[in-house]
Image (cartoon, rainbow, N blue to C red; front, side):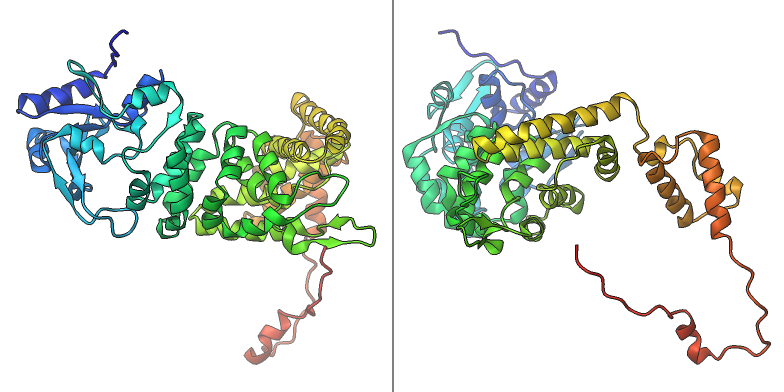
Length: 484
């Protein structure tokens, strides 16, 4: 068999040479070796070395360095604008928080350093002359598409419970079968995830759910013990049946089918997982034994937002997910005017996601439901394509007038400009105005004339007492609005 050879970047070779010329060992290690063996281009290049942290700093005294990870033996060296993590060979002491070792011991042995790593596929190192260092069969496991812990799985996961999610992520992204002992240890150690940072959980889940849909869905089926710890809100979904002509699965299994069929997009995958999470709370059964879930979109949105906030997800990322959940059962448009309005609300890309989500949702229901929905889905896609092709006026920037035109007419700068432009845009979208400059300016002039203040009658000379000033500005009675 031909000896495995990695093509290392010149910058990495220079860093390794600097360490070796100072009398230390140096290797590339971990993910970059794994990815190279899989024929993928490594994203990051990590190095390990026999040099102690202080010795690493001395070797690269002329370069910019960062010492944030020095306590655990990692020095980040900045070379030609790129950061490279260089870590001293080490063994880890006891883990007190299921995540970080209480102390580390720096050593001079590569083999001992590799022994502390999580999975065999990540416990390989490479040297341009010495070749591949593979003490635990990581290369063979990659070829067999097998995920296996280094050493005792229970110990590995007890040391660092985040390795549970890392393992599931590797299994998803590389389509690996999980070794039986490793799989059992994942199930047994799942409760330890309660002590892991929510932000780290989010980062691992974000990467996991973007893998191949059917693989991700199967991991959610096989490891419910893990997801029940991270997202206890999904537990009621797993026993919530759906006795309804449109459905053939319970709520949890339906959601996993939607997840499987949703495009590999973070917004859509998260929405797929949680879009029906409110169904157990809203379930009712009519006199014919048919289940209904009125208002579940609103409840699901509320629960999902709580989960995403707990995961420290930014509002910028969480809001589109929650919008998809809230609107996931809104009927698709059947004419161009309806599509115009929805595109105004969601944008072209957003509306494309709405259609794709509807398709995934239908695919997770009964075959008859999917067959009935396909013509509606095709019509909605045709309407959207028609809008894009005809370059219809879809956004404020598409209008033939702008704020400067309104100022010329007489509007004062301020929020009223946006309000009037939005009013005109809706008239264009509804087909009541053509998007022509003279037509739109004429409408803007009409609005301006209607909004022009009527001269107030002369007021008496006596000033209004301060004590009733607020009453004059608050004369509208409170009214209650029916919920939609």
